[in-house]
Length: 523
Image (cartoon, rainbow, N blue to C red):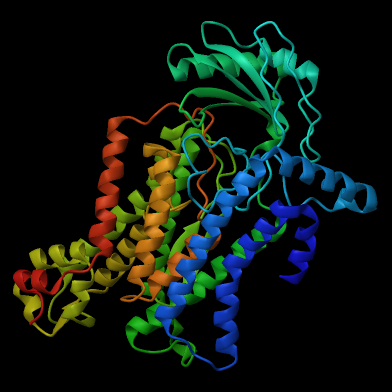
């Protein structure tokens, strides 16, 4: 924190606000684990309250940061400090500035994550950063007023800009204003005809005049009007580094271990205490791996259909259920929101259907001599599992213990894993699906709502805190804008999105005591 403050102080108000944002996120965890290491235990409800307050402070600081970044005086002061730093620091070229002009604060997922968000499609922002100075607009016959670019974003060359301006015409997009943006440009004007047709024509013309050096985005501005953004192709998502690949491999191996341990727990022993029985855990562990594999294959088959590249999965190992699924990055830009939806929903759809089939088979094969004897309360943990089990097991659910086939446990675990990934937050599959159907503004709001619900649910289930941390730390930002962000998915995809959210709720929500009594589940 002290080092961060020393780095931020020379950049004035913008630097200090950015530093305070990082403090608001890290301080609660430093306090909590520091006290824990010292043997001092604090009430969980108090810690949750501190976390919620830190999120509120983070968002408030982000708004202050955006206002400061839009203040001409503050931006000028920041630019002067950056230039002075470069003059006095001999190693400045190898040390990137803590602020990247041209991007704005995302507040995790708040107002800046809106349908008009024009942040770089090549990378999501997570900290407040100063905006790059923009030039005044140009007339139809006037030469663009290009100002000197900010330090980290060299302006688009004048020759390239003149070539790009020739792609616009009255039959596609009638350009009225050009604004430098990062190392590219924003072109404002009037869209003519269907967005899909206009985008295809403009993208083809751009490739014809500049080759493969630039990408064209058709996105809405803050007022909802279509604008064209052109950025260098070097801004595309990059493949994983060697370190990230090693991390993905390590998490995969950890998931193998936790899956074996989970199987041992279900069989009534601790694998690490009696490792000689590891072979007994293989059947259940293989079932968990199959569920994870089907989920990932769903993503990759659909991605292959559209020519979308995906990173290796970063599995999330856990002792409770083996794994909570995986985090997968897009390594290429989405052509449109329909492709984003299809690739995102394919994983939980495939994994969910496979898990539901396992549940049905397990319930159908269950009898008095089945391997697992589980308490009836097990079936109260999910509305979906309870209703299906009642239909297939009938009066058996009135007993204190119910004998079930191992596939019942596997099916239930698979449904939970896939339902968690369907939560409408950030870059989870459900968050991406909501962004694709309803836009970035709604997706930002559902992310906040999901975090609030998880914070409340922590009082009943500590696992909710685990997922709140995962979302807040690594997946709160929305997915990059698609190349054609204007084109909306059709009604069939919208219906699928609603059904997936419904199945997520039915899987994760427990039965109320009164409903359990009406269904005859338990005493």
